[in-house]
Length: 197
Image (cartoon, helix red, strand yellow):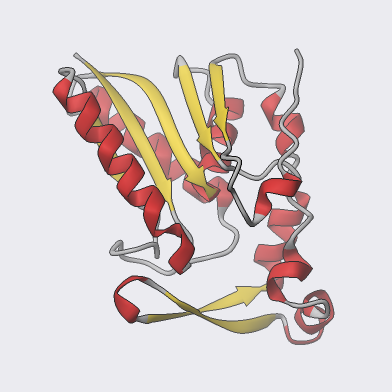
């Protein structure tokens, strides 16, 4: 049997609840076809432990690596594909650029140009505020009517803005499927995954 590792990294925004249902439906469809899947959230997302960070892309790549190795070494299954949504989409692409050991990568609405959208999301003066104070507290509505508070740090924003997703994509040897919807909002205008190798 082959397994698909699904990395669902949903930032704590109320608009990102539907992808969790989408990945659950995909897992159910795989199961009905005799395929296994491992679904998880990165640290600080949804019900996982740890603290959320706007950055930590490479740490999350290593978390995904641990999941892939767990499936291979403990569950004794082959990992046929890795799937990620939003930030998780970026993480699966970065994984593929570093580790050449998964045949298929599915990127659902991962951002292509990482230095855009910061001011639109956090305010036109966010870079100045972060330069001055180093961090800014963020409060967002999450599922179940709860409010999630996290610290947006200059380090995390700098990390994100410095990521070269298009360059990373050129290092991927796996087959990649990138999915965006015509009704996508948010990063859709910054995606730009037109890479030829």
